[in-house]
Length: 233
Image 1 (cartoon, one colour):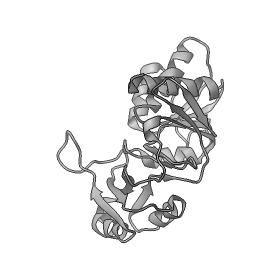
Image 2: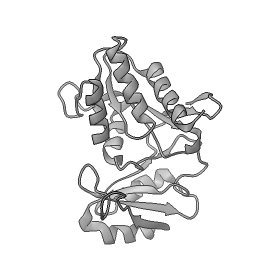
Image 3: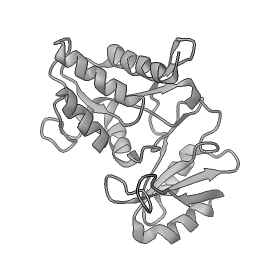
Image 4: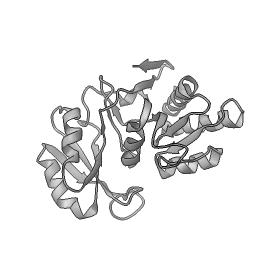
């Protein structure tokens, strides 16, 4: 299967397996999670799913939900009450313990808020995202306020990481997140303990959030090139 076909298969499979009528549903960001969003929209249009209260984790998700007529809420909405039944999202890397690196799309802050407010959590990926150790190949995103750029990046480097400010592709200058912050991408030279570092990085003044997701043990749906769907719990 082509990679795009794998991503579509995985996103659809997670929705079919886990989403039920009446759910308060977090919908994630990225090239795999977006297929889950679209399939929720299809099922709503076909009347096979109803009464979904969706909380998207980025502007990308908001726009996609609008396209498909998916009812939009946020975590502060009275109907949501700060808690979600399930969040489905993608990941940039997944290790053997189902810990993840997320934030390649720049939406790590709301992605983590939604994930940690969810009773159940599902990650959808293709097999290329599986790694033995996190943040050695794909950099760990760290969202920080722009006034803290230099001291925060120096503090990140003191942890043994190479840190670079993420630059925009079709805009001059740095990437600006949905919440108006910068992103530093950091890569470690040797394996690290992501659980310990998730908390340690967030103690750096000026850091808003980082892309280690370790406090949950998500159900991971993995698509393989041979068409096989693996579910890792």
